[in-house]
Image 1 (cartoon, rainbow, N blue to C red):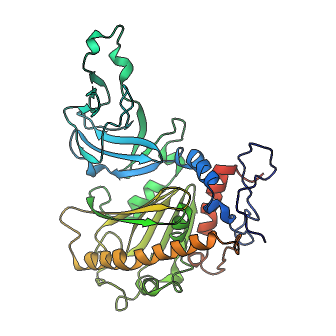
Image 2 (image 1 turned 90 degrees about the vertical axis):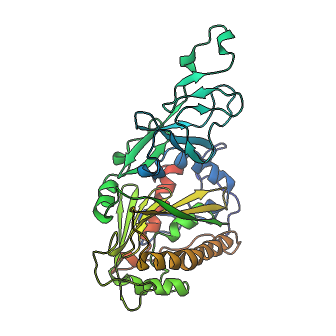
Image 3 (image 1 turned 120 degrees about the vertical axis):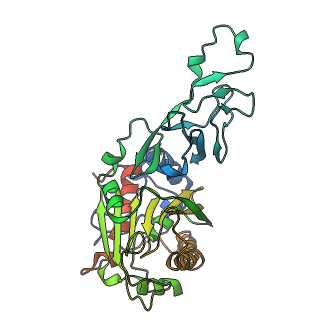
Amino acid sequence: MNHVTNPIPSNSTKGSSRFDEGDFGEDYKTSWTLPSFWYTDKAVFEAEKDAIFYKSWRFVCHKNDLPKAGDYIAFTIMEEPIFVIRGKDMKLRAFFNVCQHRAHKLLEGQGNAKHAIVCPYHAWAYTAEGKFRKAPQSEFVQDFDPHAYNLKEVRLEEYASFVFVNVDENAPPMEAYAPGYEASIQAHFKDYDQVAYAEEQVYEIDANWKVVVENALEGYHFPYSGEYHRTLCDLVDPDKAETNLHQNWIELYAPRGDIEKAPYALPEDETVGTTSAFVTLFLSPDCLIYNWPNMSMISVFLVIPDGPEKSWVVNKYYFKPGEGNDKTTLEGMEWFNHGLGPEDASLNLGCQQGLRSRGYRAGRFMYHPDNSGLGEHGVHYFQKLVRNAVNGPAS
């Protein structure tokens, strides 16, 4: 097989947006992975922006992160600046973070704008509900209609107490996009509606966003890929691991392992913590809500693409007020933040370096006949979601 350095549209005519899929197939037992250029080429990345990131529901925060009227958080989805704010009516709304005068960004970071959202360029002001409020000298402008300058709203949903936005006006609602995802959060994570932001870790990884996601969707590498991953096999029981596929989301589950061998202190009481098992709920394309056994928190793992070969990982921790300072949680966070997380980042980097090589074109998915948790069908399903979004489903 020859390495492909540029995407070659299959069934191609000039201007086609369909990229070569190689021997990627519908059955992961016989399929090859997507070709390596899907992880390095700028044209593929640009296609993913439009086909995936501007059409999907994207995690923002927990509803309790914005408790007061005027509380806001500003962020971007690729190049689109957006903010979420709680209005005086206590309703959460999302808007494009753009002044309707000369397009300056309105808000930065996180804070409170209870009295008004004021543009730092020419002081145009808006209410927390996105309504135009005032602009210096607007009374002198002929036919100036204040109703024409309200902020442009972005779709927002509170879903299992978390906040998601979607810039696509025509996208289906969250439950239609990922049916059952909310119910799974509610079933697995105790106190999911009471937690609030505690802290976060941020990693910069020189790897394509799909490399980072795929690493989180399979347990095949756990026994083989480093000191901390081997301790993971003591923390959970890999022989009973499950990977369950759903529409636009994946559930990974494994019961906890040997208390005596675990890399952090595990209580004998299985009711301690949010859950007594390892649970990861992946929402396509880039969000994982998860927890490790008996830790008193819920974690959100976000993969933020920054070009074809660079990603940022933001790992947010949410605690129930008054909890999270127990020995199990503190030791578990230390193990992940300074052990397993960096080890995963190193694996991501190693994969990306190989994807650039002339010596690699595509690989095979590993099949486990007795235990789906140790196979790679979750990775195959994720790649199929990407392929379907960019190229359309297989004909």
